[in-house]
Each structure stands twice: as structure tokens, then as C-alpha cells.
Amino acid sequence: MSLDMLGSLRRTTYCGALRASDADKDVVLMGWVHRRRDLGQLIFIDLRDRAGIAQIVFNKELHAEAHAKAEDLRSEFVVAVEGRVIRRQKANPDIPTGEVEVLATRLHLLNNSKTPPFLIEDEVTASEETRLRHRYLDLRRPKLHSNIELRHRVVLEIRKALDELGFFEIETPILTRSTPEGARDCLVPSRIHHGQFYALPQSPQIFKQILMISGMDRYFQICRCFRDEDFRADRQLEFTQLDLEMSFPRQQDIFEAIERVMERCCAVVGVQAKGPFRHLDYKEALRRYGSDKPDLRFGMELHNVTQFFEPARAALHFEGNVQAVVAPGAASWSRKQLDELAEFAKSAGARGVYTVKVTAEGVSSPLEKNLGADGLKNLAGAVGAKPGDLIVAAAAKQQIPHTDTSLYAGGQIRLHLGDKLNVIDRSKWEFAWITGFALFEWSETDKRWVSAQHPFTGIYEEDLDKLETAPWECRSKGYDLVLNGNELGSGSIRIHRQDVQARMFKALGLSDEQAKQRFGFFLDALTYGTPPHGGIALGIDRVVMLLAGEKSIREVIAFPKTTAAVDLMAESPSEVDTAQLDELGIAIKPEPAKGYK
Picture 1 (cartoon, rainbow, N blue to C red):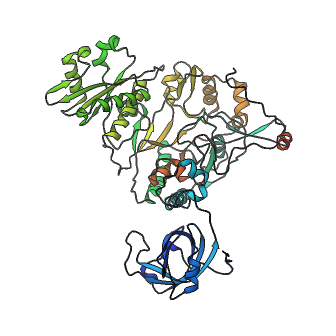
Picture 2 (tube, rainbow, N blue to C red):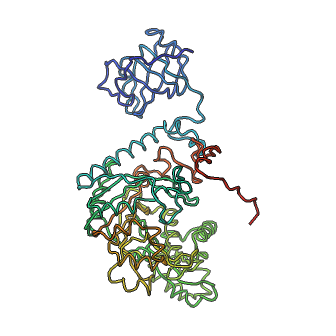
Picture 3 (spheres, rainbow, N blue to C red):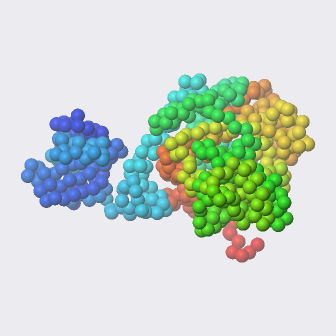
């Protein structure tokens, strides 16, 4: 089989752009053979490119040479077709080009192809591992093409919106110094400075604050960030975020800028989002929904029912509070369904679940011997349960100081029930700003209070006196943007005063020397007239994932890594040769034998 050269041949239009108005036009199309059907005198191929599919017909009687070459075509061969657009005898309403086809006059075979390991279709049965290993083929699928185009359009709208609001797009360094920001740094050894390392940025946090000190006033960046985290579902070693910072802002100014951005992003997929978005206090969100990223598309709020369980605390062996959710219409659930619910609850951090069925005949539960008939009736009345409903209550398995862990367990049960009962309105787009976060959180690993966000997060002025005495009561000037139960991003009004920053470091257990060692150049910059400032970072991958209706960010990233941080296509990470290591002054320490400690 001989291949043709492209030469001076030029494509006149995309396959997917053909319409009835193009009938009788001469065209040149280029793309991949999606499907081939040989009917003897007639050969049909579906030709695919970025824009879609066009049907090409090769007629042996009219154009014998082109027909003869078409007999050799197979899936994923690359071709150019010259021909005339004609109307189909029977239109295909399933594709945009379905009213027309191209009668081929000449065929140019530009390249052949091996048989792909999976069909280039939207619905594939191949494993994700196979798809990622052959990502160049996976990206040919129309859905993946659509996702990448959507990502482009979303980022374009972000840039347009922020330009209109007076923001400058400024790049910050990729090779910088290691600073603690919550995850392990990705380190890069320096060849020139032996024994020293750059770090890839977990975020441009310090640099964007320095840009405010520099008088840039309004900055944004579509930036790459790197975090060496332990294996976590739907997280990437490298990811993309919208980073934004403003000088002299009220919190509301930042909210309004991001609301404008999100309105424009949602409009790309025909969704009307309109600011101002609702606000929820952190503690209220936890109390009502058991989450700091609540899904507001359905009700089923939590009820603190500890008082009804108090008489049975010793018998039921639970600690802390008990939260309850009313599952509408679930009183008829089978024993198997209830057992599955109990297993899920345990995996979500609950000791188990306590269930109460409310029927027209009354209230029934295995808890009756512990709480009594009247106790069950009072419980049902307190949570507003109606006949046909199931009350699901749970206490947390683990207790953390100054934290009501029952709320988190209850929140997971709420989401699980909402999904099982199909009460979540999937057509809704419910945004919310979560504010009033705790400034510190307890680290079980370190047995101390650590920064809940980062050490530059502002503190409510009225809580400053509690910084040294009751850190768990301190509220931060941080905020999150949430959409349909997903955290899109976090931000805060920053600390701009040296005295407050010094107290924050002290509260975190950092000595002056440690603070200087980790943040020296930034602390020095703070001494030169730092303006009040604040900002936010939104996860571009997650925003596009939600707009595309996907369940994994890997479906909207061109070349993602697995949950084990491996690029299967490029076979990365990989070993490097000894000469490269010697040049960097690095020796690989052998792993200890298994079982050795």
C-alpha cells in the first residue's frame, strides 16, 4: 500500500461543519476513518476530525480510481478527500451533518494505522489504565474532544472577565524555594548549586502577596501547581488553578469578581448563574448539612438528637453527639438495604446507624427497648418525620478535641441517602460562599494546633486576644466557594501587619528563627508598607469537570496521571542514568528490605 504526500493540498472545511447549505460545493476534507461500510459498487466511510463526522461515498461507476483506493481503508487511517457535497437521499437526524454527504472524486491516503486497542467511540469498554496508556487515541473520542474545547472556552472567558475588571495576568516562578503549605513539595535538584534544591510551587501564595506589596493592585494567573500528596481519588500531582489577588479589598469585592467569572463560565454551557451567591457560616453549614462544602440541591438537613439518646448512652456505648437524617419514603427499605446503609455509615466514620421506621400504624425500631415507645415518638416529632419516612441516626466512631465529629458522619450519610433516594435535583447549580472558618485545626499526627489554611490567613479582629489562649475559638477571614457539594476554591483576606503575622507564627509554634528560615524574604517584604490584601484560588480542573458533567477531573485534563501519580503513556516517573545523577551530586539510597524497620 503506497502512501500519498499532502503537498499543496489544503483543507477547505472541517468534516463536522458541513450542513445542507453546503450542497453542490466542492470541498477538501481531512481526518481519520471512523467507520467503513463496503456495499460493492458503493463504499461509505465516516470521516472524523475535531469538529465531528461527515459521510463520504465512493462510487465505483463514477470514480473508479478513488473507489479502488477506498477498498484498502481501515479504521484510523488518515486521509484527505476531494469531492462534492450532495444531499442524502435519506437524512440522518442523529448527527449535525446528517442532511448531506460528500461524493468523493479523489482519495489521498496520508497514513495507515495499526488496529487500535479500543474503539474511538464515546462509550468504551476499555479500562481507564488502557485509555491512559494510549491517551493519544483516547483524546480522539468526541467526548474528550468536547471536554478539551470546553476547557479552552472556560479559560478564555475567565481571562476576558478579569481583564474587564482591571486585573493584570502575571506569571510567577515555577522554580522557587521550599515553603510549608500543607503537602510535600516536589523538589528539583540544582546542578549549579550542589546540594541545594528548588521546589515546584504548591501555589503562588507568597508571590501573589508580594505582587500586592509591589503595587500591582489586581493580579490573576492561570497557573500550574504541584503537590506531592499521598494517593487520593481524583487528585493530581500537578493541577491548574485560577489564582487571584486584590489590594485594599473588602471580602465582598473578591466575591463579586469571582461571581462575575463564574457567571461567564457557566454561560459557556448554557447555564444561567446569577450573583450574588448565598452565604453560609461555616458552623451553620456543618450543623445543617454536616459539611463545609454542602450540596444545597436538596434538603434532608441534620438534626441533633443527642437528648433523645442520652438515657441509652451507656447501653449503646457511644460518645459525643448523635445526628439524625429523615429519609423520605424509606420506611419500606428491606433488611438488605438497611445493612448496606450501616456498612456505608461505618466507612464514613460512624459507629453504625440507629434506624426508626415511621408508618401509619406508628413508630417502630430496635431502639424501643433502649429509648422507650414515648422516646421514639418524641424523636419522630422532633425531626418532623411523616408516615413512610425512615429516621437514620448516627454517632461518630472517633472523637477529636473541639470538633463535633458526629456532624461529618451525619453529612456523609445525608449525601448517601440523597443519592439513593434520587432526591437531588441534578438540573440545579447551587453556589454558596462558606465563611467564618476556624483559623486552626487540631492535628492528630502532631498533637497540636495547625493552620487550617495557611499561616498568612487573616483573623477576625475581635478574636485576636484568643490567639494565644483559645486558638480553637479563633475565626479566620477565609472563605470557600462551593458548587453542588464540591469545593471550587478557597481564599482569604491576608495578614498584612508584621505584629499580627509574628503572633500567628508564635501560635503555630514557630520560633523567630524558624519563621525567618522558612519565609525570610516574604517577612522582609512585609516591612515595606504592605497594603491590606486578599484573594482566592479556584480549581480549573474541577470547574470544567462539573460544567462538562464528568465525575473525574482526569476526563478534562489532556494528559492526566493516575491516582498513583503515574503517567502511563509517557512512562513517568522513570529512572535516570548514573551520569545525570553524578552531575547533580545525587546518590539513590536503596529501599530497605520488606519487613525491615
